[in-house]
Image (cartoon, rainbow, N blue to C red):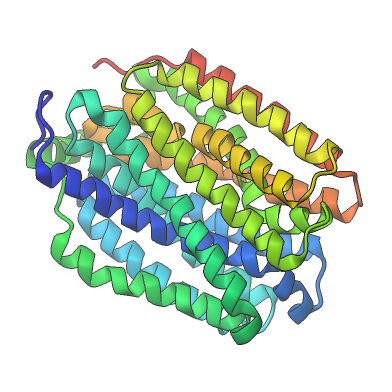
Length: 399
């Protein structure tokens, strides 16, 4: 079990295994983004119809965070992660067999349930093995796996999609999830025994309402506002960046590369902020990054740029937007103590999926209306600023 002074080799290994798990999440989410134009052609649908598929995955993530993730405080983090991996692998391969928007949306709900459960569980698990001084790193670094998986998937899909079609992309992503299952079965430990047993007792005694309420109520409400508004902007980009890059003048293959470059920036931003937060105030870092992302949104929408300029701005948006929004995970780890951490994080991320659901839908509606890029990007600046301001108002939990 981690102490407040030392970080064991095992704890560091757990953090990087959680990083790998989140890489799989990134693959499973962004494969849909990369193949979105191909899906529109295959099914003969417009952007609003495809937004339903994006939203279905987010509904699943909300279910996973609200209903499945709290089980990790009762039965343990490890079994929840293993269950979620099986669910994701099965549903991703089922996505490759979809015959239309409805069947694809159903499969994506189950993919989302697995992702929502994994995100909360690995954050709580990694935090449980880390010393207090490195908790921001332990909870932030796993989140950086998400854009790495998304970036690698982008380069693979850009090369293989024209050769093998969208079905193979989904099935391949499902096989990646399946390959990680035996690794986690043998290598993923349970959380430190003391905090885990205490967590099961406290969660059983007080229930979810008391775990999130009482002296934690103010922080809980602020954190929910952070996740709702942050995810609204984040999932707008995650869902539509490929199509918006095409609208900005890029060829389809270059647009997929731009999306991958965005995720490379997201990796850099998440890792950098995780370590910077050990020296500087996490809340102010989060606020500064989201202010920067707002400026970059306006630049992307208002300025005509060559390929190099578009790729550079996409990279910087990844650093500031996803780096800033991913601060919600270490921020949540400071709001909730170990006994109810998976419940608190699961509910915060589950509630946040409401914003994640709205983001792609609003984006699809705006694209369908033919609004100019600057208007489409500009409407998402306010949610980012609200996220930063709410983060500044949150105080660390001191039971």
